[in-house]
Image (tube, rainbow over all chains, first blue to last red; front, side, top):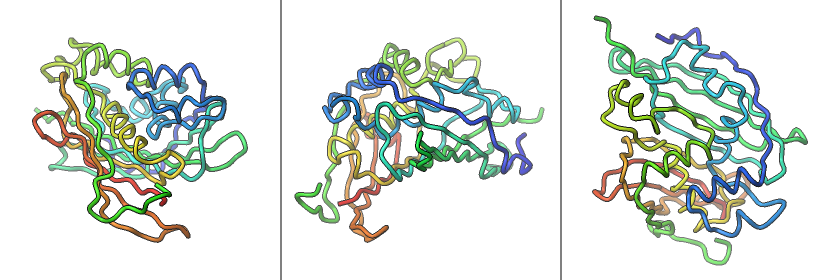
Length: 143
Length: 135
């Protein structure tokens, strides 16, 4: 089981480029027809797309699970948060720096909540966003 | 949102989405980079103790975000957060809504706080969230 020693742990930074073709695939998948997202070279990205960019370009998108010894089959997404500080547009190159900010046991250890916070900066070094994901681990019951 | 200032209680976000198919989950797997097999491989899902594959929470949050950006230009969204209250099953037809709960001054600008929900066709809340937008 993951314990407090995981707090503060950092994972490999991910660099991702906002590519128009990949973004179009995402928009089409969600049936997104709002022209604001398709209006050319500096179109903004949809509000959840930062989460996707980090996973798409990570050499190992589940690195934090492997590193903490968590089985992917026992994981659920508990909460997700985005704080936007500056625009992210098509053509940007973003760097994601994830770290564990808290570990909390629930239900007498049946579940562990792990919060991973990620600072996002762009190619100019501007801190464009912070994301926070809470992972719920369904722990195996000792038999 | 700049032309008219909303009032507390106004439902400014409302959008219904088509039911979620296996095909949609497969497309989202590729489009999002989230290749967790639990959403597309029924054998994997069953081995993990689930009766079938189920929707990515972030697909549902993507729909909620779409409903939000239909009402608010993306550059005015300051934060967007959700709790994944329940697993969204195959076939779920979601309705996403957002209501103004508070008008605030923050970061040197006037902002509104919205309470957001994504409910399935039975009215069960799948996502409960919040957004803060600049007015």
